[in-house]
Image (cartoon, rainbow, N blue to C red; front, side, top):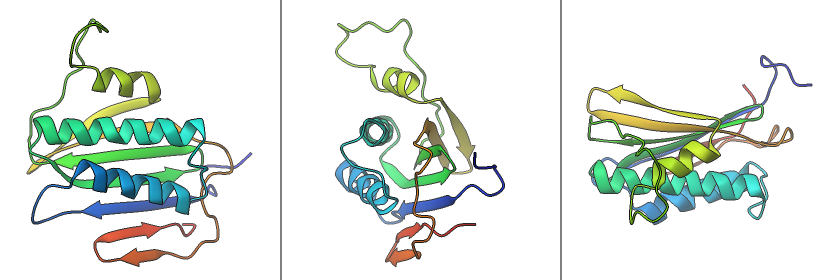
Length: 158
């Protein structure tokens, strides 16, 4: 068993200051980061993480003026996906969920796939985050940090 104090950790952040992030660009960042951290892209956990990230990015585009940042962080078996936008209004889960409804399914999917999710108000907007459980051997315990422009992946142990 890995104790919380010695569990490997990592963080990857993609920022955009001049314009909102495109959903495709954000999803590429998520897939690349998960691959860099050693998670098989065909696994159920990776598929769930990409689906949750896609829903958070789509909500930011549709309701928040577009994503300004996407951040992934992991600690042991927990993966946290966070998407920030410039709208301060918190999203709300549409309840009851009606599968025949043409929209309103995004947060329902997040609710079903994530261990937990929430909203952090910011001075200039909000961050919507979701936490998923990952396999025990997740993350590159010995990989060096990788930096490229505003795209930053840090997979070194902390």
